[in-house]
Length: 116
Length: 115
Image (cartoon, rainbow over all chains, first blue to last red; front, side, top):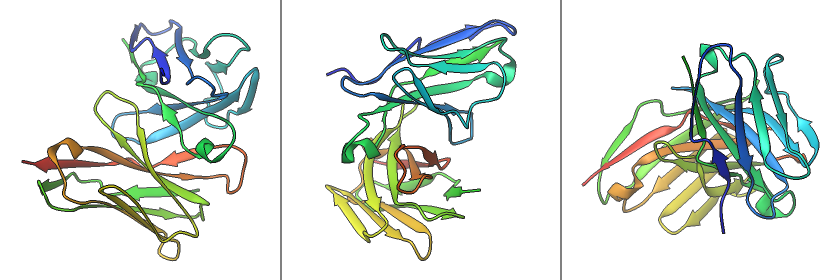
């Protein structure tokens, strides 16, 4: 019964490169959330997706960041032309989408992005 | 905008004692509030959810209270153990009654239980 799977665990990029972070939700879960955690700061909501739909991207920076959750395959958080300020831990969470268990989030172990 | 505050300083207690962590929020009335545990290098793990019409919730050695008048939740761990050492996060939903599970999180309180 695999949980939320994120990869890679660690990602190092040079300024200007692209970063792709992947997330496979728990089996049976159709809702995916991305959060970012900066040192000494709390988790910040970025985007909420369902299969093939972006439901709420109010926490996403307006430029360089995009997310998708295709019909088949994992959810992808894409950061173009990374800058040092993008260095952070990026967490993916999933929920089933209905019922009372939808009210809690199941998190992956995160991807630590380091921009040199 | 909504704001959540948790004890910014680490909480150090002796094994066997009760740990009490505080979560205060402003500018909002959530439908429910949640507590998560986060270990270094790991994602948060859900512990407890308490709804606005509930005063108290228990799960094994954990107890959560929710005072919507004071806009405060207290999280208690009784008979604490070194294995309880972690960062504890408070979170609340920001779309009251909405269809999403969009949560905002506090910065967390680091609990260290000394043997």
